[in-house]
Length: 167
Image (cartoon, rainbow, N blue to C red):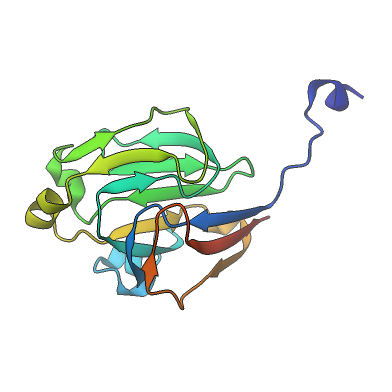
């Protein structure tokens, strides 16, 4: 009875669609030039070789974590799906240079909402790679992660790439 009164009885949808957060060329996770991502040590996912410097939310949910170096943002869906959007490789060493965060931790976001901007040329010149991994960091809590690997180019906020079902 109390669950109904206080809204706690609402069933959360176990399905989540993950869209491209960045416009560019699709990269299979195994082809990301970093073993931590390519060997799925952090979880299942994909990469994008960006053609512009804007990152939008790939899911409906909330901003869970903004790294102090601004190179990555953690997001969480209502069904507990956790997603990491990591801009480039070895970009933590840039110490925030070339990044502009547009949201704050705790903000509610929808697919397509701007999260951050980055200087694509600066990253190309100063980081190992601009290829940006998008990772389901709690893959262990999923019952299925279906990734569309037949994609070549992706458009931020429009191209659906992953269907996730949580346990």
